[in-house]
Length: 142
Image (cartoon, rainbow, N blue to C red):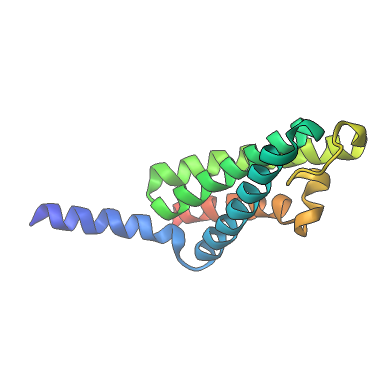
């Protein structure tokens, strides 16, 4: 009987990350995962020699998006902390790559997901980690 209550409590704490704005974050990170995986897989498979740095960075973005999606769906305090660290790392990546692509465009013969702070993706790549960090920090208190 006590095990059932413990499991229900754990499920309740996990569910809180995907309620309200958390559900929108899961959806957006899921869409970005699919987009970045599709884009990077195609580019790496067909034209890697043209812009290896850009395509590798897009693949890194895809892994980051997929991991954050997974942790948000998984829920729980440990997953929340992992997602928070990953969102912070993602934000640093977007800012570094975004700045790099503007300062030295010749290093990027083709765009990455994070080029120009995600301009090709309606700036979602720079807004998403900021929103994710805010949500994840607030969800700890709720």
